[in-house]
Length: 145
Length: 411
Ligand SMILES: Cc1cc2nc3c(=O)[nH]c(=O)nc-3n(C[C@H](O)[C@H](O)[C@H](O)COP(=O)(O)OP(=O)(O)OC[C@H]3O[C@@H](n4cnc5c(N)ncnc54)[C@H](O)[C@@H]3O)c2cc1C
Image (tube, rainbow over all chains, first blue to last red; front, side, top):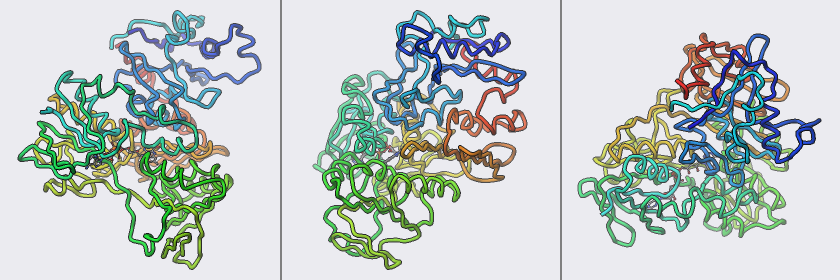
């Protein structure tokens, strides 16, 4: 399946991926209205200090520990390998946060857990973070595993 | 005859079905459960009372799970004896079930120490099952005073579930602190204060000496009146089937790294069994849902003939009460490193140059990065520990290592 490849050396720490992610999942048509003067809840995290920066999205692990650990079976993996969350079933116990080695799940604005679904479930063509990255620091590519 | 038989229908059992089906798509599976319900998430019973989930949403797998996985399920039947030699299970209705491979996934049973006068209490229950939750619901109303014996995970989750539906909750525990199995003293005090602010009363270092129908007399001489009593003192692994069949048991059913018991063709997984805890190098009962599922999954693969090891277990917990979240993992051994700040209580436990455990109360975001340090026993001198101590982040790994981690799927 296609996943997001992280090219750390190209990352400018501009955080645009986080904004595009939050916008794509906001259900709103206007980016300014969706994000201006609001705390955003992106599903991708940019880590940075004065020397390093890199974007960390969900890796859609083959053997996804979050899916196995989920106490409410809100997390599942489809036949293509896409790890998804059914927010309706989630009770925000944070067990997925306990087991994810990438720190890729976090509560959304509503307090319910959310995660990157590669923009396959929100009506986008390809991940909005990738489309919005000005420097190809993240790419949407066929993965080996 | 079923090729595979599973006693139990909860997390470990479901893990086993999915483990078997990842190897063998057709071999018939039979599940036996003494509960009357479709498989449900046991930890969600408190969220059910809280109104955060419902009977439909708390199902652990969809309605067509058994059918899709070619499983027969016997509801409301108790397995009373197992014979490894005859490959046979005896049920409480005197029927027998034959197996080629068996998984015992019988979970825990509530532990109720003998207490004088308990029989005279009419409105009492444990808090272990959907039926318990329904029973408790029928006992309480907005004027009820509820006494919970046990300030562990189950007792306190119960308190959270019903606090807003009753008048008063008192929690009594023999230990001098709450959540003694997962928190240190300081952390426990913090969480206790939070629960008290929400309205839960605690009497710690005390225990019930005697009950009458609506009142408990404590050892200290205090008297606590109640309308309903919840017994959440503790749980014990449900080992009786294997014990009676002369299989090896300690606290829980002893299993090897393939999740097999000492009896031929019989496996065990979940709360009834022990797992090898890599952080203490001891075999332990890890009564946690993620452990039950994974152990069941590995057992299932082995039962279906694909050799698989279960070798990276450890205690770990994510739990929250009224918006205060905490995540804990591993063993609290070795050097203690306090990385708390104003908002968040955070302790690390380091031994032999590796992280062995941690406690975080408050901002638990991305804590799984810490869990992975324990699980993989990453030598802390190979990462920027000062950086990661403050906040979990992949940047703390050396450049090539973090690239390997994030881009594993592309190698
Ligand atoms: C209130 C509560 C909250 C919890 N919260 C959490 C949490 O937040 N996180 C977490 O990780 N864990 C939590 N747990 C623990 C978690 O529920 C267990 O670890 C998990 O359910 C274990 O799964 P299991 O399959 O081993 O056994 P169980 O879920 O105990 O299931 C065993 C099943 O086998 C059946 N059975 C037993 N003996 C027989 C027999 N002889 N014949 C037929 N059937 C039999 C039982 O009736 C039961 O249905 C909680 C538990 C409770 C009670």
